[in-house]
Image 1 (cartoon, rainbow, N blue to C red):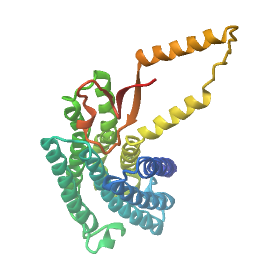
Image 2: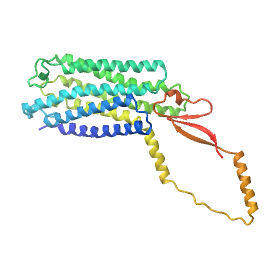
Image 3: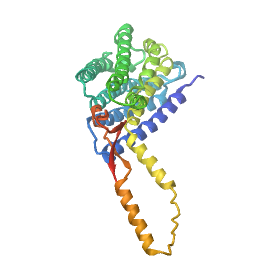
Image 4: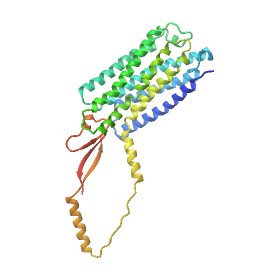
Length: 343
């Protein structure tokens, strides 16, 4: 007896843990460490709540029959699994829409050029509008609504309509993801940074759009949604990839905000492992000569002080304009160095 339910369940549990861990770290960094918790973070929290609802419904579907052949299930269990599958679709659409809005708002906090701002706004607007249309179609694709999970399925839109909508949704998701992933190239291209710093900036800013790869990989499995003869078995890959798509997107978008935490951990580790050099006291038989020597040394330090670099972190909410250097300051991704003289 074929049963891919354990695969669905394993992916479900993994991303339940990873997404909540990543979000918790993001909230800690943005709300407590940096104190810049913004609307993009609230949208990410909303995304996680809807994604958790999706995972809960997928868990119920795996218990009752997702990943199994219809011939191996009772009609009652199959209909319960289909009901959970229908709820998963609703929560998936909302989660996929909210995560793109969150990433778009995150990029809006750091972009400065008008053209980039409008590209992000239009991408988010398109995501919201089509997401609402897609959500409406998902909920009301059958009349009555319960016909979707009733066996045999009757009174629903033709498979061609559903497939056309799904292909369009997958394409728009991929376009939006790649827009958010490629736009940072143009955002940092003209900034006065070293090449290495620009590459680092691109990696961090584009990390949030990594889920686009999964969106493209999932497109060939869209056709399985039109198979009513063995739906729960045929759509197993689609269900797994849908979980991976949103889950990876949430983790990547949260990891992109964790640089202050990583920096603090590294600094703490270095302090904890540091060793103090032994202090050797030299006695002098001539106290006046020793005092004169110290006085001369202090005069030397005052007149020949070496510049020391003091590091200040730039909040994630600062615009990219603040990351470009002007004058004599060295600017790197997320930090700016100011040269001062100490004695």
